[in-house]
Picture 1 (cartoon, one colour):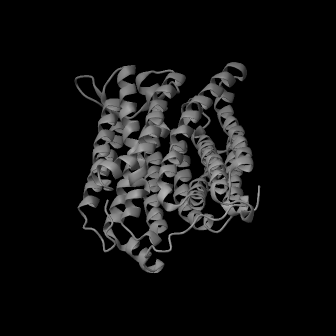
Picture 2 (spheres, rainbow, N blue to C red; picture 1 turned 60 degrees about the horizontal axis):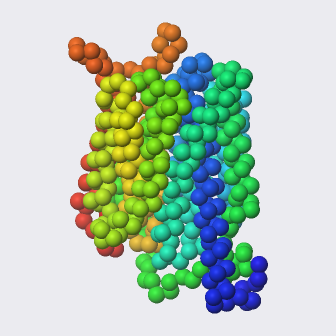
Picture 3 (cartoon, rainbow, N blue to C red; picture 1 turned 90 degrees about the vertical axis):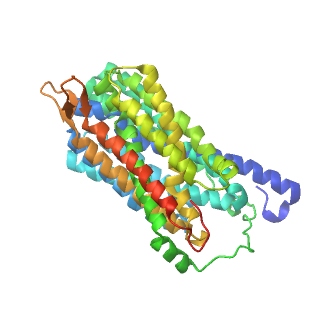
Length: 448
């Protein structure tokens, strides 16, 4: 590429436009492949339990270990990513994650599985910070929101790819090599997809414009900022930020419940085949991608930058979706699909808002990282605790089949404690979102 001094004006704009298109495409694909290396565990749970490889409680604890590691790592890696070459760092994180998946496929002891999956959580936590730092380096603030929305769809794209590809690999491996290799091949397939992601990052992911011979993105020098230490103190002491973090943690528990255990629930409770269950749960990821991408635009255009009304509405939709999904007895494919459509609609909005945006709105811009870190810890600690608790509500019957704990009424209807837990945390998330909205604006004039 030409050096900075060799291009200017329209030629510089064209060079930037071409490179930015490649950059956003790279971030979208690479982070989606990160998700495959995270969700292989979800797709293979039922097979691991029924093959006797691990118990439901062991699997629940392993899932918690990964999410707790992710919560800690996301906060730490946010600081690290600001100071390193994010192209190399995201490749390193994906390499470690792919290696962890390959090791799990070897059928290691439960204690080693927990340790390896904890490391995978730390490796997974490099992906989002690297992408967000890259966004700040490649786009000016006034254009960053649009591309943040596009990049945020990578979560849902990764879920779709994970459910479809891993389900297909498991069916093929089970038919050719036996049931024991079905779940193991799921992790090996994820490791292979991780290798593809590393190659994509090497060829297409950019660290900063300066590395490509382009001038750096201009900074708005007119923007007035408070002292960083003062801004971080506001973030740490603002009640609204902590209420948003709690609401996000409770929402994350309901979201990851479906991500981690949704396929399992449809198989055990409603008798769906694995591929059919995966396709139904995948619907929420497709809808969520659109919802997430549009959430910021909708709140800015129709709610004048306030996220509160839309967040509460989405929370109520989330509760409704889980009620339809879990409490209606019998197998009703169209109703289950509708539940996942509503769930995806709510998740796309709440993932963006409670996952960080509402907290960032409440603090000075110089403390956005602190607010995002607080929100991130709340979200993934909630998701991690959900994994362990959900695992405790699953049992293995005398015939070896997985079953759900619950209470059967005189009418014959069985209420699963798993449903009570998932719907309960979703409802509590709405309550804490409302409480956060009632907190007065801080001295920065932020709004929820």
